[in-house]
Length: 585
Ligand code: DGT
Ligand code: CA
Ligand code: CA
View 1 (spheres, rainbow, N blue to C red):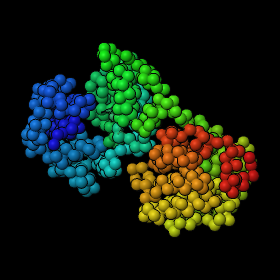
View 2: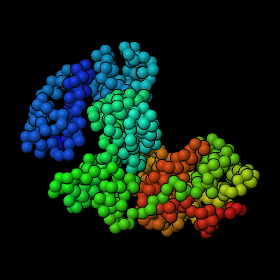
View 3: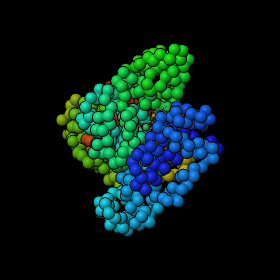
View 4: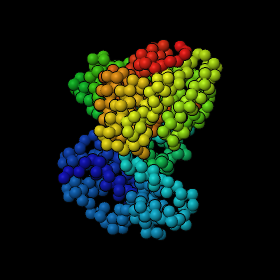
């Protein structure tokens, strides 16, 4: 079986790892790392290069490496690696996957305690045997234990929730800009710039005419746990969390093509490159080049790349190869909703259930954001863990809100509840109480693991209750922690289209639920979406951006998003659904 570029690169990296654990000289280690990186980023199939006898033309692949690659592709094996495995068991190399465990720590664990797997490392840490090793200590031991848990979580999906990745990336970029001289432009690229809900690795891009000081500053940032590779155009590091970060530095004149390329997605790039070829251009991260003359056309801005191909600039959130290039060609790209379009929030908590702040504090925070309306939707009674409201609690809240409203004459304050759809499918409050509420948000929290039929039926029951206005976080997923329920979201969206129920995009970065794909389906069927932060404190309101980005990835315009509407129109919609009795507006 032919090996892929990735597999060959993986073998070279493994050799680098073993040599490092053995304490081999830096130069040899780096030569394998460079070779691995070149093979990984090669634009051609390595088997073709090999058959053409051109292995040594790959940057960083000299005579020694090309011999090993030749043996590998010819026989599927490598004698040298087998010899290394006799010296250092593969399990020892696997210890390097634990964030903050580098070659010297892995070697110490193996040589002194005979540890040859992540499981054994965990056992040793729990038994308190690690902290006696030289260079370890109690703090390191505790950290390793925590990092093993991070690793486990990550290994399940191999990806990091955007809520962890984005703050880390922004801090790195800010740190780099403060530390390095001569940065002309800097940006986040990759899946982060496209706002995918989970991130494989971070991609940073810098334009500068002097790359080396930028790379040096990057390697010295305090967050860097390990430098994986560092060359003139690319440096890869690992953060303490285990996340990998790739920094690329390029000439300012080529910024546009580079940013376009490294933003991806790969599928979008492939389609764009095909379109370019049909127009006589070959497109890569460096330039557009005429396929006839080879002459380069440099693009300093991303807009230049798209306009050279007769296209308007395409927002990164749409670049997933889901029809965006065709839409751009027909001038049918949607005008996407923006953060500034959002006029209020319809899902928030206070101390009446599990929120941390009073009604007045939350309302003040909402007004400070310029909101025109804000709804309190504390949990209903059956959700004991959250201190859910009994009907009497709800009425007490209503009386307090009457006073709070007087201090916020310019903001419409609504009162509702986040009403549990109980395991049996009924709602947690009687219809008479629901009818008194300005806005009813229904949600499933308990018995999340029911079979598909049953949990779908619960959601449909909620949608078909005329008092229910919004279905919150419909899949119940928690990124990196809990899989979505079995609920049939396509069916939910269809029924919401019939009942006129609003579907939530929960903006909390651990939820982002609906996800982009289902939210797009809702947009197609004309189901209004509401972007809610589900705030339990004023700080949570900052999460709004994440939800807006899901809506953008779903091709939603402002008109598709319920909480961009003017207060009058929003109230009218709720009233027509038979409930809103706000005595304001
Ligand atoms: P991730 O890291 O898995 O969340 O996703 P991305 O999209 O950030 O992927 P990554 O980090 O592997 O590469 C960043 C971008 O670079 C990617 O979106 C498109 C571009 N790119 C990388 N490798 C290739 C490739 O082999 N072909 C093409 N056309 N583009 C690539
Ligand atoms: Ca990436
Ligand atoms: Ca990357």
